[in-house]
Length: 407
Image (tube, rainbow, N blue to C red; front, side, top):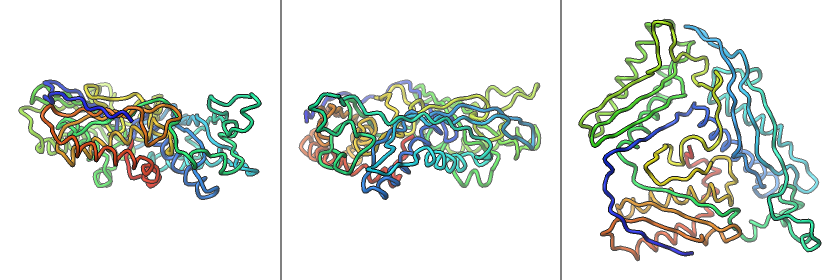
């Protein structure tokens, strides 16, 4: 492993943008569904066959249906289309795995919990597009007959799962992370987490989960704009709708008092037109009901936000194999490492971990850490980093226990 430290002056940028796509946003739903399917498939195969079989559900998509909505009532007219894309092992030894049946069952469970207003047996349409073809590297040369690549998604036994003997990177890729979060980043997360919390939604069932927050900071001046859907079943009139907007503003301004702001400007549902009745009133609480689409990897990064002025990667983390897929494991490792560096040394930092395909998972090709100019405890920092690298394989079990929020 080539471990590199880069020093820089950590000076707060005068301007900053931060975005958060809420739990019910189609992209967040797609990310969360992909990860749910990966966890369920991993637990199923581990319990049944003794190991997590090869799979990737990081190409999952949701295509919007259409709905009928008015005050006091809302329902779907056309179904939400669930695109079950990716690859998965369909056989172990002589046993066929009912992958399609399982994925549909798990998808219904997930979407019933996230969109409780829908009827999963009527309002969902499934398109099964999974493959079990081998990754590049399988050849038909005579010498390759002794390898296992051709059995990547149809292992004959545990002997065909090379990661059980030597855990290596599946790809040449990178993962990145940074710490700590800025005031604006924490504020954006707290706004959406509060609005979408169980307590808030229990007391205000009209709040839809497809909450989107965009924040801008100019020096100490903060500007926040939100879209907050309301669920028609719980909104009886335009007067109710407006009262709910007032409630939302008071709640957010209460959160804002925790943060240092010279000024704070707040806008909610800026597209509303009360004169012609065009308001953010929904049947399900999500724009997925009305033609919007969601795809894995288009939403929040692994720390829950989209911060374009920060170090970031375009990897779609959710749904990837939790054992060896670098786009998930190294991204998570870099994020966790950055937080531990901050917790242990109190310094702002950025971490970038780069793999080489086929290289040992605990021996990254390059590990680069950006640290402040004046930091001098390099020996202590190196010790922490090396320990964290050796612990990378332990992330798999934590992922199966859903100890991380990946989107």
